[in-house]
Image 1 (cartoon, rainbow, N blue to C red):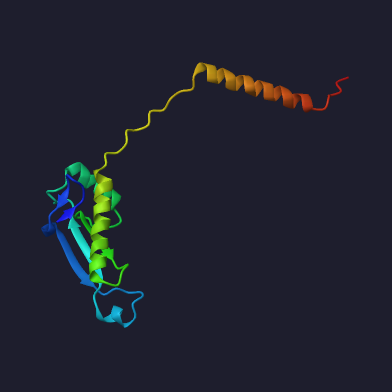
Image 2: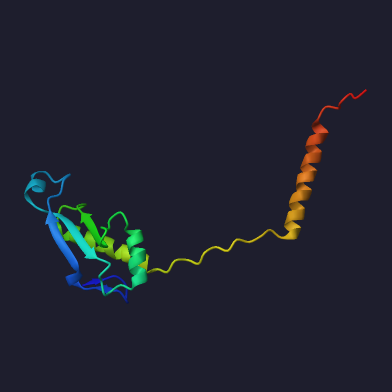
Length: 141
């Protein structure tokens, strides 16, 4: 079981894990032991998630999702299977938590008040007067 929130619990049958060889640091151990984890989660067909959460999840994890709605997470940060497995599960839970949050309401644009418009225009005309006072006097004969 993967406990995401108090309302969302993913059954272990919905998660598919495969251990693969990891590259990088680890010396000879890397070539011998499959410590990296590939975690697959079929979000589109999961009974634990509401349809709105699934859509937001597939947007959040679009770079990790297949066309069928399966999220594939590869974890190879650590040198042991257990830590990589926990890392992959925690990354999936974090993504689902982010998708479970409802999006904020759209911003409603406000208009400037009439007084603020007048203040802005007064300041502009004052500034224009200051600048025009700096100009050389013209000799119109």
